[in-house]
Length: 329
Ligand SMILES: NC(=O)c1ccc[n+]([C@@H]2O[C@H](COP(=O)([O-])OP(=O)(O)OC[C@H]3O[C@@H](n4cnc5c(N)ncnc54)[C@H](OP(=O)(O)O)[C@@H]3O)[C@@H](O)[C@H]2O)c1
Image: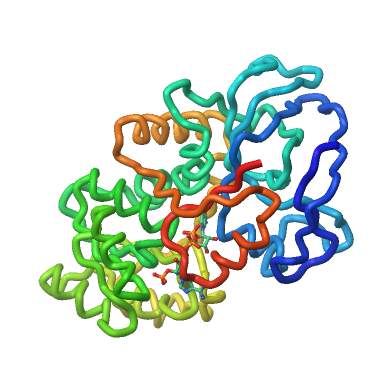
C-alpha cells in the first residue's frame, strides 16, 4: 500500500500522520505518478496550520504539498502528452505531493529535462517560477536597478538574489541573523542587512543616493511592509508576495501609496501567473534554462525522508532554515 502524510485536522506539524493512502486509477485527464522528490514550501505550513488552505475544513483527510518530481506510472483517458515512464515535475496545486504516489492533472504537468536532477527541480520549480514572474513580469528588473529582497537567505530569497544578480541588478537584502549574511552574499546580494540591527530603509537610501529602489520583494509582511514602502523610489513597485511574520496591516492608497510617490503595490500569486498552459510552459522553460546554465543553485540544505515531514515543518516554522528543503519518499 502507498503511504502519505495525511492530515485529519488543521494544527501543528504533528497533525501530519504517516499512514496508508490508497490511490485510485487516474481519472480522465490525470496522470498517476510515483514521486522521486518533493519540494517543501512555506505555504505548506499555512495549508497544514490553517492560516490559509485551498480545501474545506470539513474535507479531511487530505494530503498537503504542491511541488514534486516523479515518474509516470499510468495515464487516464484523454491524456496525450505523457506516457508511462516519463520523468515529470509540477509546482502548483492541486495539493497532494506529501505522498509516495498521487494522481495529478496532465494539463499542469511538465516534462523534466534529462539534464536536470529530480531533487534540484523539486526544490526549485515552484520558487523558481515565482522568482521568474516576480523578476520578469510583476516588475521587469533591468541592469542597474536597485532592488530590495527581504529574507534574502530564505528559500525564495536565495533564488531571487541569484537571478536578479544575473540580470544586472544591485541587491539590498535583509536577513535576521549575522549567520545568514554570508549565504545571502554568496547568492549575489550586494548589501546584506541584518534586521533589526541595521535600518534597511537607510541602507537603500544610501545605496541609491537618496532616490529609493525600483522594487521591493516583500515576503515578511506585518513586521516590514510599511518600512518597505519607505524604500521605494517614486512609481516604485512593492511586490508583497508573502507574509511570513503575519498578514500586514491594511494599506491606505492615499496616505501610504500616493503620499510616498505614486507607488504600486500588488499581492501576486503563482497560480495566476501560470494559469494559462502557455504561460506555465514558457516560465518553466526559462527556469530550466537558468538552472542548466548554472544561474540558479537549488541550495538544498535540508533533506528529510518523507516519513519525517513533521521535522521538516518544525524547522521551517522556526524561521531558522537557510535555503531549500526537500522530502525524499
Ligand atoms: N505569492 C507567491 O506566488 C509565493 C510563491 C512562493 C513563496 N511565497 C511566499 O514567500 C514567503 C517565503 O517563502 P520561502 O519558501 O522562501 O520560505 P522559507 O525558505 O521558509 O524562508 C522564509 C524566511 O522568512 C524569514 N522570516 C521572518 N520572519 C519569520 C517568521 N516569523 N517565521 C518564519 N520565517 C520568518 C526567515 O528569514 P530571516 O531569518 O532572514 O528573516 C526565513 O528564512 C512565504 O510567505 C511564502 O508563502 C509566495
